[in-house]
Image 1 (cartoon, helix red, strand yellow):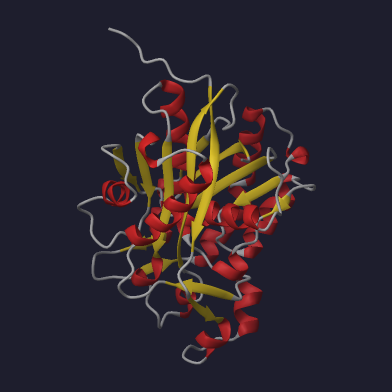
Image 2: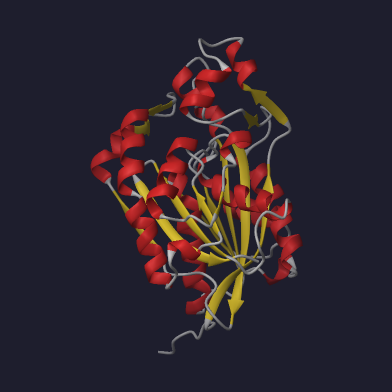
Length: 318
Protein backbone atom coordinates (compact mmCIF):
# COMPACT_ATOMS: atom_id res chain seq x y z
CA UNK A 1 0.00 0.00 0.00
CA UNK A 2 1.31 3.43 -0.92
CA UNK A 3 0.85 6.57 1.13
CA UNK A 4 -0.18 9.82 -0.55
CA UNK A 5 2.49 12.47 -0.46
CA UNK A 6 1.18 15.90 0.40
CA UNK A 7 2.71 19.36 0.54
CA UNK A 8 5.19 20.43 3.25
CA UNK A 9 2.64 22.98 4.38
CA UNK A 10 -0.64 24.64 3.51
CA UNK A 11 -1.71 28.27 3.51
CA UNK A 12 -4.70 30.47 2.82
CA UNK A 13 -4.38 31.95 -0.66
CA UNK A 14 -7.33 34.33 -0.47
CA UNK A 15 -10.55 35.23 1.31
CA UNK A 16 -13.90 36.30 -0.06
CA UNK A 17 -17.09 37.52 1.56
CA UNK A 18 -20.72 38.20 0.76
CA UNK A 19 -23.50 40.05 2.56
CA UNK A 20 -27.13 40.39 1.45
CA UNK A 21 -28.22 43.86 0.37
CA UNK A 22 -30.96 44.42 2.96
CA UNK A 23 -29.74 46.32 6.03
CA UNK A 24 -31.74 46.15 9.26
CA UNK A 25 -30.76 48.76 11.83
CA UNK A 26 -31.43 48.80 15.55
CA UNK A 27 -33.95 51.58 14.93
CA UNK A 28 -35.78 49.32 12.47
CA UNK A 29 -36.06 46.60 15.11
CA UNK A 30 -37.21 49.08 17.73
CA UNK A 31 -40.27 49.82 15.56
CA UNK A 32 -41.65 46.32 16.18
CA UNK A 33 -39.85 44.98 19.26
CA UNK A 34 -39.56 46.12 22.87
CA UNK A 35 -35.97 47.24 22.39
CA UNK A 36 -33.85 50.27 21.52
CA UNK A 37 -30.61 51.16 19.82
CA UNK A 38 -29.00 51.79 23.22
CA UNK A 39 -30.22 48.46 24.66
CA UNK A 40 -28.81 46.47 21.74
CA UNK A 41 -25.48 48.32 21.58
CA UNK A 42 -24.96 48.00 25.32
CA UNK A 43 -25.59 44.25 25.44
CA UNK A 44 -24.18 42.92 22.16
CA UNK A 45 -22.51 45.85 20.39
CA UNK A 46 -24.51 45.56 17.16
CA UNK A 47 -25.63 48.64 15.20
CA UNK A 48 -27.00 46.90 12.11
CA UNK A 49 -27.14 43.51 10.42
CA UNK A 50 -27.84 42.07 6.96
CA UNK A 51 -30.84 39.91 6.08
CA UNK A 52 -31.13 37.66 3.05
CA UNK A 53 -34.07 37.94 0.69
CA UNK A 54 -36.78 35.28 1.15
CA UNK A 55 -35.68 33.46 -2.02
CA UNK A 56 -31.94 33.73 -1.25
CA UNK A 57 -30.50 30.46 0.07
CA UNK A 58 -27.44 29.35 2.02
CA UNK A 59 -26.02 27.92 -1.23
CA UNK A 60 -26.65 31.21 -3.07
CA UNK A 61 -24.61 33.14 -0.53
CA UNK A 62 -21.90 30.47 -0.46
CA UNK A 63 -21.51 30.74 -4.24
CA UNK A 64 -21.04 34.50 -4.00
CA UNK A 65 -18.37 34.30 -1.28
CA UNK A 66 -16.66 31.29 -2.84
CA UNK A 67 -16.49 32.95 -6.24
CA UNK A 68 -14.80 36.01 -4.76
CA UNK A 69 -12.25 33.89 -2.90
CA UNK A 70 -11.39 31.94 -6.06
CA UNK A 71 -11.07 35.14 -8.09
CA UNK A 72 -8.65 36.58 -5.53
CA UNK A 73 -6.62 33.39 -5.13
CA UNK A 74 -4.84 33.38 -8.49
CA UNK A 75 -5.99 29.86 -9.34
CA UNK A 76 -8.87 28.66 -11.49
CA UNK A 77 -11.95 26.77 -10.36
CA UNK A 78 -10.63 23.72 -12.24
CA UNK A 79 -7.70 23.50 -9.80
CA UNK A 80 -9.92 23.02 -6.74
CA UNK A 81 -10.47 19.40 -5.81
CA UNK A 82 -12.27 19.67 -2.47
CA UNK A 83 -15.14 21.91 -1.34
CA UNK A 84 -16.20 22.18 2.30
CA UNK A 85 -19.23 24.20 3.38
CA UNK A 86 -19.66 24.94 7.08
CA UNK A 87 -23.28 25.71 7.92
CA UNK A 88 -25.93 24.97 10.53
CA UNK A 89 -28.82 26.67 8.72
CA UNK A 90 -29.38 24.67 5.52
CA UNK A 91 -32.95 24.85 4.27
CA UNK A 92 -32.91 21.07 3.79
CA UNK A 93 -30.46 18.39 4.86
CA UNK A 94 -30.32 16.57 1.51
CA UNK A 95 -28.57 17.30 -0.78
CA UNK A 96 -25.62 19.02 0.84
CA UNK A 97 -24.71 22.57 -0.07
CA UNK A 98 -21.10 21.81 -1.04
CA UNK A 99 -21.79 19.76 -4.18
CA UNK A 100 -24.32 22.29 -5.49
CA UNK A 101 -22.01 25.22 -4.74
CA UNK A 102 -19.09 23.49 -6.47
CA UNK A 103 -21.20 22.83 -9.58
CA UNK A 104 -22.38 26.43 -9.77
CA UNK A 105 -18.80 27.67 -9.46
CA UNK A 106 -17.65 25.43 -12.32
CA UNK A 107 -15.58 23.11 -10.11
CA UNK A 108 -15.57 19.72 -11.79
CA UNK A 109 -16.18 16.59 -9.66
CA UNK A 110 -14.52 17.69 -6.41
CA UNK A 111 -14.87 16.02 -3.06
CA UNK A 112 -17.74 17.94 -1.49
CA UNK A 113 -19.29 17.83 1.96
CA UNK A 114 -20.92 20.03 4.60
CA UNK A 115 -19.95 20.23 8.26
CA UNK A 116 -22.00 21.49 11.20
CA UNK A 117 -19.72 22.90 13.86
CA UNK A 118 -22.13 25.81 14.31
CA UNK A 119 -20.19 29.04 14.88
CA UNK A 120 -16.89 27.10 15.05
CA UNK A 121 -17.60 25.49 11.68
CA UNK A 122 -15.24 27.57 9.55
CA UNK A 123 -12.27 26.86 11.83
CA UNK A 124 -13.12 23.16 11.74
CA UNK A 125 -13.26 23.29 7.95
CA UNK A 126 -9.97 25.17 7.72
CA UNK A 127 -8.28 22.55 9.90
CA UNK A 128 -9.61 19.78 7.67
CA UNK A 129 -8.44 21.63 4.55
CA UNK A 130 -4.97 22.02 6.07
CA UNK A 131 -4.80 18.31 6.84
CA UNK A 132 -6.08 17.36 3.36
CA UNK A 133 -3.43 19.44 1.56
CA UNK A 134 -0.61 18.29 3.81
CA UNK A 135 -1.78 14.69 3.70
CA UNK A 136 -2.11 14.57 -0.09
CA UNK A 137 -5.88 14.11 -0.21
CA UNK A 138 -6.33 17.45 -2.00
CA UNK A 139 -4.17 20.16 -3.52
CA UNK A 140 -6.55 23.13 -3.38
CA UNK A 141 -9.54 23.37 -1.05
CA UNK A 142 -12.39 25.86 -0.99
CA UNK A 143 -13.72 26.35 2.55
CA UNK A 144 -16.93 28.34 2.96
CA UNK A 145 -18.93 29.39 5.99
CA UNK A 146 -22.48 30.34 4.98
CA UNK A 147 -25.55 30.96 7.10
CA UNK A 148 -29.12 32.13 6.74
CA UNK A 149 -29.82 32.39 10.44
CA UNK A 150 -32.81 34.68 10.07
CA UNK A 151 -34.95 31.85 8.73
CA UNK A 152 -34.40 30.01 12.04
CA UNK A 153 -35.06 33.01 14.30
CA UNK A 154 -38.36 34.02 15.85
CA UNK A 155 -38.50 37.64 14.73
CA UNK A 156 -40.67 38.46 17.75
CA UNK A 157 -38.05 37.14 20.20
CA UNK A 158 -35.98 40.12 21.27
CA UNK A 159 -33.18 37.97 22.69
CA UNK A 160 -32.34 36.41 19.30
CA UNK A 161 -33.84 38.68 16.63
CA UNK A 162 -31.42 41.49 17.45
CA UNK A 163 -28.35 39.24 17.23
CA UNK A 164 -28.46 36.85 14.30
CA UNK A 165 -27.93 37.76 10.66
CA UNK A 166 -27.07 36.29 7.24
CA UNK A 167 -23.95 36.12 5.09
CA UNK A 168 -21.06 34.03 3.83
CA UNK A 169 -17.28 34.01 3.92
CA UNK A 170 -14.80 31.79 2.12
CA UNK A 171 -11.12 30.91 1.86
CA UNK A 172 -9.04 29.05 -0.72
CA UNK A 173 -6.35 26.84 0.81
CA UNK A 174 -3.39 25.58 -1.19
CA UNK A 175 0.08 24.04 -0.83
CA UNK A 176 3.02 25.90 0.65
CA UNK A 177 6.71 25.19 1.21
CA UNK A 178 6.29 26.28 4.82
CA UNK A 179 3.27 25.99 7.14
CA UNK A 180 0.86 28.90 6.81
CA UNK A 181 -1.87 27.34 8.95
CA UNK A 182 -0.96 26.37 12.48
CA UNK A 183 -2.11 23.31 14.43
CA UNK A 184 -5.75 23.44 15.42
CA UNK A 185 -6.86 23.33 19.03
CA UNK A 186 -10.42 22.12 19.09
CA UNK A 187 -12.89 20.50 21.42
CA UNK A 188 -16.42 20.51 22.76
CA UNK A 189 -18.51 20.85 25.91
CA UNK A 190 -21.41 18.55 25.16
CA UNK A 191 -22.71 18.87 28.70
CA UNK A 192 -23.79 22.37 27.68
CA UNK A 193 -25.49 21.34 24.44
CA UNK A 194 -28.86 22.53 25.71
CA UNK A 195 -27.86 26.20 26.01
CA UNK A 196 -28.11 26.82 22.23
CA UNK A 197 -30.41 24.62 20.17
CA UNK A 198 -33.26 24.26 17.70
CA UNK A 199 -35.76 21.72 19.03
CA UNK A 200 -37.12 20.49 15.70
CA UNK A 201 -37.93 21.57 12.13
CA UNK A 202 -40.86 23.65 13.30
CA UNK A 203 -38.90 25.52 15.98
CA UNK A 204 -36.60 28.53 16.23
CA UNK A 205 -33.18 29.05 17.78
CA UNK A 206 -33.16 29.06 21.57
CA UNK A 207 -30.20 30.51 23.46
CA UNK A 208 -29.39 30.98 27.13
CA UNK A 209 -27.44 34.14 26.56
CA UNK A 210 -26.00 34.60 30.04
CA UNK A 211 -24.76 30.99 30.22
CA UNK A 212 -23.08 31.30 26.82
CA UNK A 213 -21.54 34.63 27.84
CA UNK A 214 -20.03 33.19 31.03
CA UNK A 215 -18.67 30.15 29.22
CA UNK A 216 -17.16 32.15 26.37
CA UNK A 217 -15.49 34.72 28.62
CA UNK A 218 -13.97 32.15 30.99
CA UNK A 219 -13.27 28.97 29.00
CA UNK A 220 -12.03 30.19 25.63
CA UNK A 221 -8.98 32.38 26.20
CA UNK A 222 -6.97 29.31 27.32
CA UNK A 223 -7.94 27.63 24.04
CA UNK A 224 -6.75 30.63 22.05
CA UNK A 225 -3.52 30.78 24.05
CA UNK A 226 -2.87 27.09 23.43
CA UNK A 227 -3.33 27.61 19.68
CA UNK A 228 -0.67 30.33 19.85
CA UNK A 229 1.65 28.04 21.80
CA UNK A 230 1.24 25.21 19.29
CA UNK A 231 2.00 27.63 16.46
CA UNK A 232 5.04 29.03 18.28
CA UNK A 233 3.59 32.54 18.45
CA UNK A 234 3.36 34.78 21.50
CA UNK A 235 -0.11 36.39 21.75
CA UNK A 236 1.63 39.73 22.21
CA UNK A 237 3.16 39.35 18.74
CA UNK A 238 -0.10 38.66 16.90
CA UNK A 239 -0.99 41.07 14.12
CA UNK A 240 -4.69 40.23 14.05
CA UNK A 241 -7.20 38.52 16.33
CA UNK A 242 -10.41 37.29 14.70
CA UNK A 243 -12.78 35.57 17.13
CA UNK A 244 -16.26 34.49 16.17
CA UNK A 245 -18.41 37.60 16.02
CA UNK A 246 -20.87 36.58 18.71
CA UNK A 247 -21.00 39.58 21.00
CA UNK A 248 -18.75 42.64 21.22
CA UNK A 249 -18.38 42.25 24.99
CA UNK A 250 -17.25 38.64 24.54
CA UNK A 251 -14.76 39.63 21.84
CA UNK A 252 -13.17 42.33 23.96
CA UNK A 253 -13.10 40.19 27.13
CA UNK A 254 -11.29 37.32 25.37
CA UNK A 255 -8.82 39.69 23.69
CA UNK A 256 -7.99 41.30 27.03
CA UNK A 257 -7.46 37.98 28.83
CA UNK A 258 -5.39 36.66 25.94
CA UNK A 259 -3.05 39.62 26.02
CA UNK A 260 -3.23 40.33 22.28
CA UNK A 261 -2.36 43.96 22.95
CA UNK A 262 -0.82 44.82 19.58
CA UNK A 263 -3.30 42.94 17.43
CA UNK A 264 -5.99 44.47 15.27
CA UNK A 265 -9.17 42.97 16.69
CA UNK A 266 -12.06 42.10 14.41
CA UNK A 267 -15.25 43.87 15.41
CA UNK A 268 -17.30 43.05 12.33
CA UNK A 269 -20.28 42.24 14.52
CA UNK A 270 -21.02 45.96 14.83
CA UNK A 271 -22.17 46.21 11.21
CA UNK A 272 -22.74 42.54 10.32
CA UNK A 273 -24.34 40.93 13.36
CA UNK A 274 -23.71 37.32 14.35
CA UNK A 275 -23.40 35.22 11.18
CA UNK A 276 -22.25 31.99 12.87
CA UNK A 277 -19.88 29.95 10.65
CA UNK A 278 -19.61 32.85 8.21
CA UNK A 279 -18.43 35.40 10.76
CA UNK A 280 -14.66 34.75 10.80
CA UNK A 281 -13.99 34.57 7.04
CA UNK A 282 -16.48 37.38 6.40
CA UNK A 283 -14.75 39.61 8.94
CA UNK A 284 -11.32 38.82 7.51
CA UNK A 285 -12.38 39.42 3.93
CA UNK A 286 -13.74 42.84 4.89
CA UNK A 287 -10.61 43.72 6.90
CA UNK A 288 -8.41 42.78 3.94
CA UNK A 289 -10.55 44.80 1.52
CA UNK A 290 -10.23 47.86 3.76
CA UNK A 291 -6.45 47.41 4.11
CA UNK A 292 -6.67 47.05 7.89
CA UNK A 293 -4.45 43.96 8.15
CA UNK A 294 -0.97 43.22 6.78
CA UNK A 295 -0.30 40.64 4.08
CA UNK A 296 1.87 37.95 5.64
CA UNK A 297 0.74 38.93 9.13
CA UNK A 298 -0.14 36.38 11.79
CA UNK A 299 -3.81 36.11 12.64
CA UNK A 300 -5.36 34.08 15.43
CA UNK A 301 -8.79 32.64 14.63
CA UNK A 302 -11.16 31.45 17.35
CA UNK A 303 -14.53 29.90 16.56
CA UNK A 304 -17.06 28.87 19.21
CA UNK A 305 -20.75 28.14 19.38
CA UNK A 306 -23.57 25.63 19.67
CA UNK A 307 -22.64 22.14 20.71
CA UNK A 308 -20.84 23.62 22.49
CA UNK A 309 -17.91 23.47 20.08
CA UNK A 310 -14.73 25.48 19.69
CA UNK A 311 -11.65 25.58 17.44
CA UNK A 312 -8.67 27.90 17.12
CA UNK A 313 -5.58 28.21 14.93
CA UNK A 314 -3.00 30.78 13.86
CA UNK A 315 -2.74 31.53 10.14
CA UNK A 316 -0.54 33.59 7.87
CA UNK A 317 -2.64 36.17 6.08
CA UNK A 318 -2.61 36.20 2.24
